[in-house]
Image (cartoon, rainbow over all chains, first blue to last red; front, top):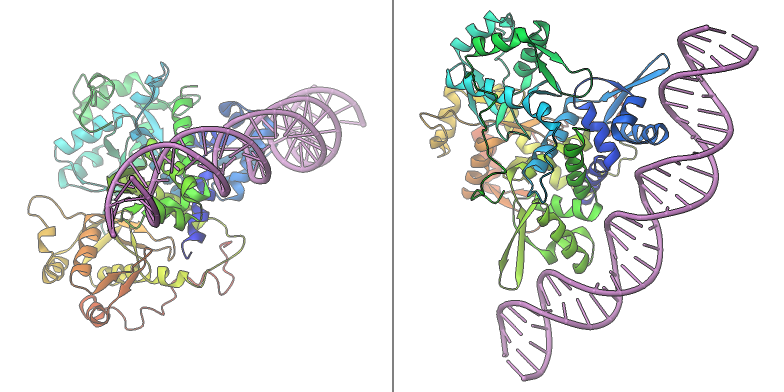
Length: 249
Length: 249
DNA sequence: CAAAAGCTTCGGTCCAGGCCGAAACATGCC
DNA sequence: GGCATGTTTCGGCCTGGACCGAAGCTTTTG
């Protein structure tokens, strides 16, 4: 009985996320940008009234925060914890046994590179993380991570040396990628890295959606700076749909 | 459109968690123990048939794993990722603006000390974590953490020195407590610590539920070994229900 | 001021899905 | 075998809530 209260709160939040239209809205907001009610309605495939109702509920529960600006109302995820919860759910969803594999044709752009709240995700993020680790610039262990001395030099060269504040250790968490099922750089370092790569125009945000585009400048610079294998796009890390693996999924 | 697929999977999983009965079942399973369908039915407050149906759905989606044993069927959370997702949701739920405060009378035992999947949570866990950090045994930074040299000695004395394997760095993550809203020790170190404290009988699992009981042996030993303040039970870290705070909840 | 655009509120329809009773299986004990 | 216990399947009831049309509100534009 003592557990009922919290379990009910759990159910309330999960039920809120568990509606198709609202899940689409939240998924769209995972890009990190604040979006208007109309945009969210379109991306969820419902009318404006319906989306408005959903947004009211989400805001009421503290999942999204709204900001009025003229005749628009911009919504965004309320806290990083919300983004983390959504991410954790997507991880579970990605690991779930798949009945049918509707691997969408347009999904490839998302799989290659996208934003995950405030950092990078997708194959590029995984490739960079792998190479950083292989070169001894970072040391990862489960969710935690650490920047080595050589890693500091590398990030200094990118102009984000102040990440490694003297007193505080640099934050370097990892985040399990739902498409690649491999960890990639998240946390404060991940956020700073993404904003720096955007700033240097090695990457650009797609006009709509969460996809990240690799500029021609970035194409060469990324491979050079992070010593990525030239065929990093091809490396199919997990052949999840080809052969049956022993693990059950 | 490219996002629809994943958003739908997100909605599917969340909707599964978002039902009161199923949330109660999952919440009960967060204790880490495998439970029978009957026990889960009772803890969810539904009949056996209903619980059976729910368990089938949860197993089908890969959230719980079932194991037949005689005429019982034991269910447990399928993967650590599921536990993590539930935890993340509970964190969001705990941060949500509270309409009414039905702080249950029996909830106090849970708030004091309980299991959180495989490690400790509640006031005791937070107090230990705080003191470890204050004494320089561990260094925490957001989700990541590290054991210092003095911390290694402390854990050696507890008989869990092998945690700090030579090659691998000790895993030391933190986990935000839904009742105290403070981080506490999780990750591999948290799991090992809990099992060691149970083994030494400083703590004992409550016969039912997730509460942890502090033995008379542990009462003294915990304070002594971790240098806890003698009044650690009283320290009301967040006076969430007494005085109105500025934060909105 | 009127018109348009963006958003919300209201009212009514409709359906997915949770719930239980009854009955069927399955397993263990006598 | 006969009975008790644990669990699942089936069928029918019923409620919560998602959805949209229409109308109302607010802010920008002309």
